[in-house]
Amino acid sequence: MSADLRAIAGEVRAIYREWEQRPLERQCTGRGDCCRFRMTGRTPFLTKGEALVAALAWRAAGRTAVPESPDGACPFLKGGRCQIYVGRPFGCRTHFCDAAGGPAARRDVRDLIQRLEDIDARMGGSGGVNLPAAVAAAMDPAGARRRGGSSGRR
Image 1 (cartoon, one colour):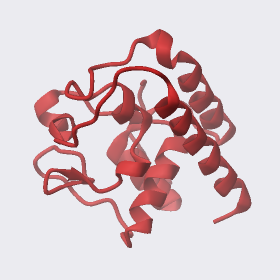
Image 2: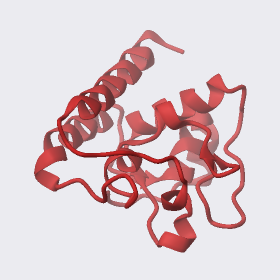
Image 3: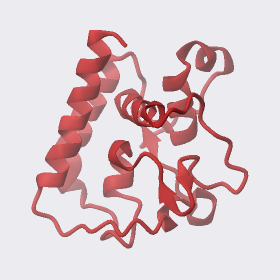
Image 4: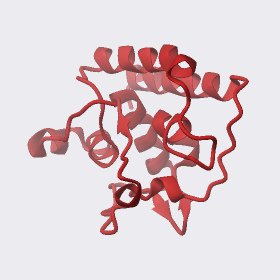
């Protein structure tokens, strides 16, 4: 991985650490209910920097491709546990889990989201992409360009 990508991953991880240091009542129970996208009707959208960190977490576990998820759950949910918990995206940390405290107030995350969007723009991104497509693109950038991707808003 290039030094530029390592630096970007470091910036994203710093944003995640900053979020964890904020004095807000949040408690992830690791139940995985929020990871069942088809059931909840909500799928996190990731910036390119977030997808990079998630892909690095997946690769660190020795994986080389994003698995299929026929039941509509997050592809990183296995046995009811997140397989990339340390590298999970910002939305998973702040918006999607009712058990962890529900969605964070926009005022509490606006500055961090802006920084993630700035990183996305520097990486040539154009906004959030759904989690499976975003991480697949980060795992195989050339293949994702050939297939196209689901772009959307956060």
